[in-house]
Image (cartoon, rainbow, N blue to C red; front, side, top):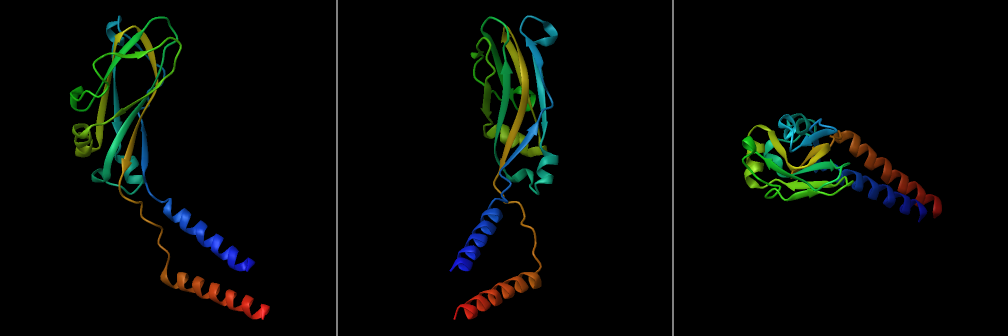
Length: 187
């Protein structure tokens, strides 16, 4: 009985690991860290974050058409006093507003993680060539962008590693022989 329990446990682990082969979430980093934005300084009012998902999709054996959603995660920090405000525009030339009407605030001393779900127009734009940008603009105060990551979700499983047919049959045969030997030993 113990052998049967071990076999069932091993089989369960095999299926669990096989089921986790789904590509799911693919993160793409913008490469921007500790970038200061200041609404009062001409050259520091905004930054364009560029994302190219092609290499990550290829590594996960996915295509642009497998993308079904994407979320931009921006980590802000505000070490100074005051109510900082910003806008985020995602898509072609910043034409696709996602982050609201400019009332997004960063409170004093906080480092919030802010998430922006890409709408259908942004997703369609991303699926054209795998590239998209996000324009972050300071509308009041000064603050930092600590990091920005675009998380792309796909709806296609990653291809499973192929197991040669003779090897899988040999494994099955050895397992059955092992069960037969254990059963014969007990009787």
